[in-house]
Image (cartoon, rainbow, N blue to C red; front, side, top):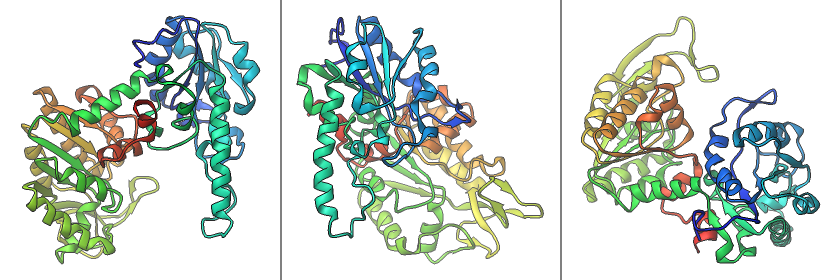
Length: 422
């Protein structure tokens, strides 16, 4: 069943969204996630249905934390939907009356799902090493099913539209789907777009296919890198990963971030790239600094900034961005691409002194997109780069899911998708 085929007239739809928006003193500082869900939510209302919205916010870990209450955003959601009011149920597990009294065209929002340990299905207050953990985990599994069944009982149909949590088998993202037949559960518009975007870069590939993987650690990206090596024509590895590869070849990297226990992994990636006929592109030079404050994203007074080869960085310096030679290599590799995946910045882009590498990548991706490439941008930092450089409207698709996108690219089945599609 698709959302366009379903008749919502006279039906109550319970919709899992991702309204985990940033707040400052109770005020939303970025409503991107709310706006992303609006097409699905409005479609249900305009189709004559009633809405029950559920989401998480933050990581309360099974405890009630007022600063993470979804009650703070109900007025903003009402405004986004163009409805006079969003009703609020302060207890997810006891919202049966509120749901039963909901009239068509009305909207009810449930409290933060993660106030309840049953949502994530993890035992609280007991470590995995504890002998009692296994029994506690089994007990929680049963409680999770009951919680999901309760949520399902509020509605006639279920819509999954939270890609950011689709990689988690939570009560509201996957287990709940067991309590609806195939004709009464579906993906929302946002989820459909996300799934299609991933399919475009993994299955419906137009070549050349170029992937840009940035970020600080090889270990967090190794599964994705290995999966991509069987698909891409060119792979750019940048950001902090540069220095693990440089060190693997005996380079001097000063105080740059490095994973000394992953040097063999870096060498194996190079070997796999060669075996797969993939052009692996690494940064040759780096913009380095003697004293950078990562907490404030600023260069400390009196610090020196210079460009060195990535394998010849003096002890007092650390690499913070791709140098001019690297930037030119990255841009040249992206030029002419027909499919592009970008995940992770090329440096500490938050500071204007070290954002040139990420800017060069972003500009090259935007230029290739203008020439007909399909470009998928994923991961919070890459999305932030696009926003900072004014490129949001110059790429094909920006994913709302960080971990979910990475697991999909890694080739893993997403529980939130499988629960609907089987």
